[in-house]
Image 1 (spheres, rainbow, N blue to C red):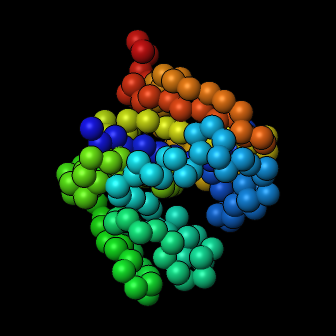
Image 2: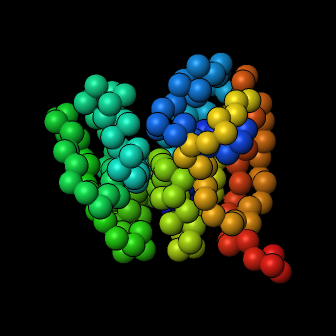
Length: 183
């Protein structure tokens, strides 16, 4: 069964990027690439990606304009963006409600998962629509004080798994729904 998973890293104070959308804090952390909840194993179960425009632009800058993914990817945006020039890149631009896109994502994923790459507001839109199943987060011992929030929503989560991966506390949560007064 296809799941929609937000797999990301965050600072201790809940930011995925600094106010200038930089990830310097993340890229300097010590990590065992074969450790708990690692990217390689996670990515092996992914069939399609979806990301916001800021994340897309960061990936394109960080990869010097080369598209690094072999899977179909939807980019949610309200503005014109240049597609990657990498041969075989399957990047599709969309706007509007994530519910309108969800069936296409699941169909493209096949029996695999949908990875919400980022950012936090996009993951929140999936959560608002009841379409976010899990959050996997690598939590670093860094504070930024400001930046792009991990998940700017009130959600009720169930802790399913934790481990340490060198500089990170790793955690997997099941999304139970919107956090309300009675839940």
